[in-house]
Image (cartoon, rainbow, N blue to C red; front, side, top):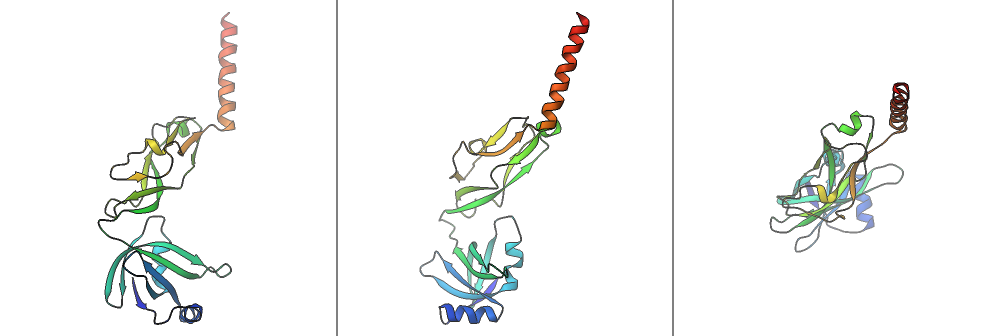
Length: 196
């Protein structure tokens, strides 16, 4: 992604920049903040993805590794009003909300339960090279009533900042499953009564 340095910083300059179809941006985390403008079209592939987006910024010929830290939208039009980027350093840990992705077919769901994702993102602290784009949770062995908590997830080279007891995914019982279980129970009782 490429941008150009802003000569002036202020509301008037930002407004003029937006009229040109550009987004006022700030890159921080280095020795000093860098204010620059970038074409709004550059953001298309960056914001319409659920994964973490690491970007290579080219600002007037200087290259920076960064992540999109914050983005502000116009309340009515939905246009991007402002974006904040954070400079990445190979030896400096960063904190990010990493999206949760499930894999496998839950045994409980096959039996009629409903999979509920309680946490869409998990707060993670790690070096940029260790930061995953997603955190994968295997739900294959989850029966009805089972859940996977933050503390159950393999955290190699990562530090999870959410509570280890926080539920990430769970398989809940449905009314249909309860009714079915009740019918099965009644059938067993009837069969037992008939045998007697």
